[in-house]
Image 1 (cartoon, protein in one colour):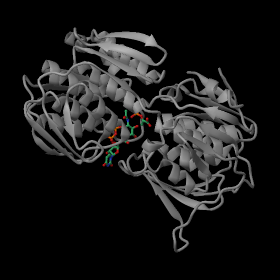
Image 2: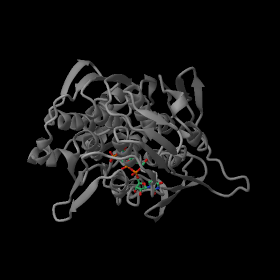
Image 3: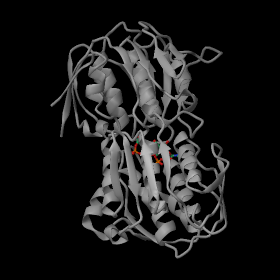
Image 4: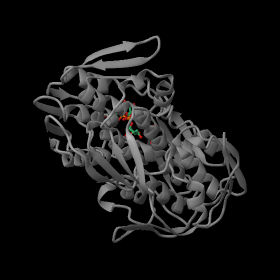
Length: 434
Ligand SMILES: CC(=O)N[C@H]1[C@@H](OP(=O)(O)OP(=O)(O)OC[C@H]2O[C@@H](n3ccc(=O)[nH]c3=O)[C@H](O)[C@@H]2O)O[C@H](CO)[C@@H](O)[C@@H]1O
Ligand SMILES: C=C(OP(=O)(O)O)C(=O)O
């Protein structure tokens, strides 16, 4: 288990470019299984979750050629489905959430797929019912081996169908979409997730010859096609990294330019930070976070305490609530952070309380933050990163704190942030990996 030693209290300065989006990368890499043609994907982030997924594809016989930094060419013309029975696959697939999205493409192209319970952050219940109910609607036979926690889907030929998803699941929508593009006839997915990750997946599938309409909405219509061809695809900048960098600049009272942030795909993320009083300016395709010593949280019109809550896109992504919460600890004013989707994602606030932040964890979903308005600097401490986003939030807190903090279990952060220590050190941060 690796750790970061973080000397806090240093102002940062300069420009940083976000990596490609983790959650999009996991989807589009799985989509390469849908064709025997060459698929070239650019802006692939060098993070451990993506590397693990690529290893699974290689195990399945997919040729993955690293053309240059961040760009790989995938060819899935010869896939060995029997790899799914190997112990190596069981271990790999259970180590990340994104592995679940090989199911849709394998089922559509080879008529069969099996997978263990996927991994990913332990942040509460993470059911996969939406995935399998959707695949069943397309005609797949579904079996669950409860003892070993394995899911199996079988279908010689999928058939298009109408479905109303019980929740707008991001990976669920991606899985069903990737199956429906090769199903016979028309599929309509209502209550589909429409995050930029899904929009990008649709764009890529359409460039492979799929016929998906309604992209960007929660009603997707797919006319199935017999085969798909290769394509080239470029992954968008990671909006969660962009938000993390805004939070970092705010907490360390630094001016940072976030380059090529793809502003058109950030939704309400910049505005959510502005509501905490952060000065985020748009300059071309860059975001500039201005050095702000003091910032004030908005209230509602009647003066009552504001709530910041997650919601499916175009609402606020749950993956940034931990960062927004940390930023609020040094603001003037109070805010209620309401994490609606996951029930175990706010427990990390105990560490912030140890550091001197004023937070009341009301229940597992809600925390009230009473901002310190920089009257007290947070104190350094020793902590463990429980999940990827709490990890980055604790790193931001440590960078603003007085003294040297230790953050253990940084593998969680490495899951989704490429060489974060090196990249932040270029901005003037003092972080060492031990
Ligand atoms: C690999 C990947 O892409 N992971 C992302 C994906 O996970 P993932 O696709 O696993 O998450 P889902 O979208 O399925 O759902 C996440 C959680 O939110 C709940 N839920 C979901 C939809 C809804 O309308 N109402 C609701 O309450 C679910 O019950 C679940 O507990 O989407 C999550 C939600 O944006 C993100 O946190 C994850 O980073
Ligand atoms: C929850 C997340 O990831 P995963 O779904 O891969 O666990 C995340 O990226 O914040």
